[in-house]
Amino acid sequence: MRVLSVASEAVPLVKTGGLADVVGALPAALAPHGVAITTLLPGYPAVMAGLKRPRVLHAYTSLLGEPARLVAGKLGEQPLVVLDAPGLFDRPGGLYGDALGRDWADNWRRFAALGRAAADLGGGLVKGHAFDLVHAHDWQAAMALAYLRFAPVKGSPPVPTVMTIHNMAFQGYYPGEIFRNLGLPKAAWAIDGVEYHGGVGFLKAGMEAASVITTVSPTYAEEIREAEFGMGLEGLVASRGARVRGIVNGIDTAEWNPATDPHLAATYTARTLARRVANKRALEAEFGLESGDGPLFIVVSRLTWQKGMDVLVEVLDHLVGLGGRLALLGSGDQAIVAGLEAAAGRRPGRIGLRIGYDEGLSHRMQAGGDAILVPSRFEPCGLTQLYALAYGCVPVVARTGGLADTVIDANLAARAARVATGIQFAGVNYQGLAAAISRAIALYGQSDEWQALQRGGMKADFSWHTSGAAYAALYRELTGKA
Image 1 (cartoon, rainbow, N blue to C red):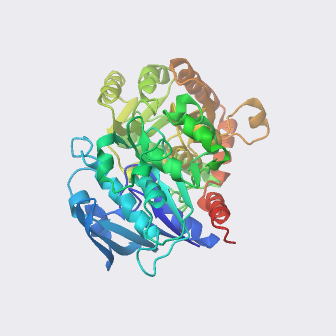
Image 2 (cartoon, rainbow, N blue to C red):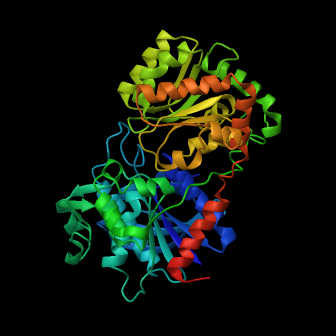
Image 3 (cartoon, rainbow, N blue to C red):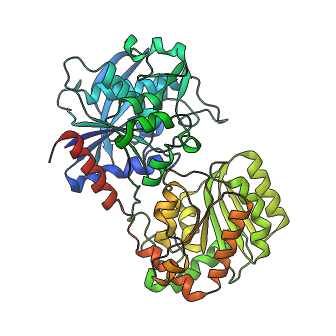
């Protein structure tokens, strides 16, 4: 079975978040199930620089007003096609905005072009490149499904499609006047097409056109049926009924393996947990924290309201007052950063910050921290808690989305059965998070109980094996291929 996966980022070439990890992992995850995935990415400078022996598949004189080419290459060992359109993607700054964080004004054109190219490729425009299914990820790729529905390649057969929502909060909504520049027929300007509150909704258009909508956890697939999480699209989700599914993300267990991780001061397994202390001491030194046997909490996160980081700021004095320390890595909202810096100033040696992102440091934090705090108000899946489980860093998580699906709360019954892997709490507010931290510190003081939590998490299977099988089964259902 041949599948075209369309996205705006993928490791190891470009990454701003978990989307890139998932898109980069899917080809290898599906290969054992008889699925060959070709990934289509925009031609950002980093992607073009990473192409080995590129081969031009197709040239456009004008793709939404810009000259462009479809260029074949490799994503690791897997097939890659890049939309090489310098006028759209060859620019300094980030993937979606300039160096100051402002969105590019032409993002609608950039990602509509990606969608048009995906529909062309998926519809058989390029000889020798036929696909059984097109899988679009998030709003940046969603227009691929609208083009396949309303403006397919002439004479091409219908292609089943999957729309995966990695985060409903980002939808790609633009003014209605852009519609005339999209190259879509008038029929597409409809409530069951691309029109959304008088504008063009990219994610909404993909959700309307998709054969099946998936989210990255079963709980989030249910949550987005409600106004609190549906972000205005809950009615559309409800209307699709059983065509909305949830499949939990996996993690790369070769990249995230404490037994072999080259970033660590000391490697270890569930049977050699005592060796983790070397990583804890190294992490204390790296963050300028006082060394000690008390619990060391970590945070690896975007510093945003969604992630509950404003509440974290409020509870830091409580955490330190109970004997805890914190090492934090992240970037985001400046008001939250200022609050964290003020807390670190009040509590030198107890709170350490690194504003930014460092992949190697994130590995060292998972290996050296005793517990990770993930107080998200909503979390479609979350990967950081999965990395923590693999590294014996006990997750303390809000009971939402993928966090609820992947962490088993250390209640009395779960602890007695030795199946608990972390701590869940309800209510992303001071009381909820402070109580969860208090629970974690109390359990940390019971060495046997704490080690049972660590080992429970480390033996859990969050590899791509199960998730890959679920995607393969969905693809077979939609294509009718065995």
